[in-house]
Image 1 (cartoon, rainbow, N blue to C red):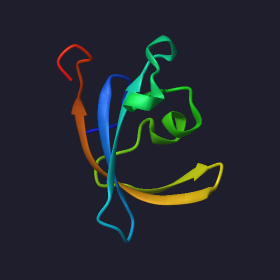
Image 2: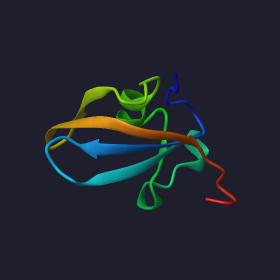
Image 3: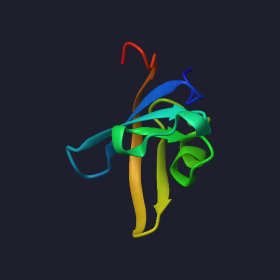
Image 4: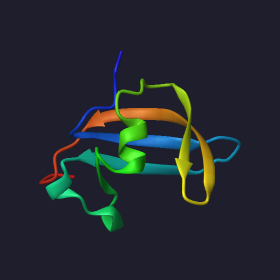
Length: 81
């Protein structure tokens, strides 16, 4: 089963919506939140790390809680996108 690891691109589906967000899980020195690259040490990155594809989870964010499903996990290369 695929897991969210450092270097993966994670697509989350927001529960009850047809809205998705991609996150690239990276090392702290590669972090670029404006372009979707989040450190595995960031609050959201830590919560996504080691989740399985298809898993439902709640992400705790400053404005509350987001219920999401891990829709897709793929390996990501920063050079090729």
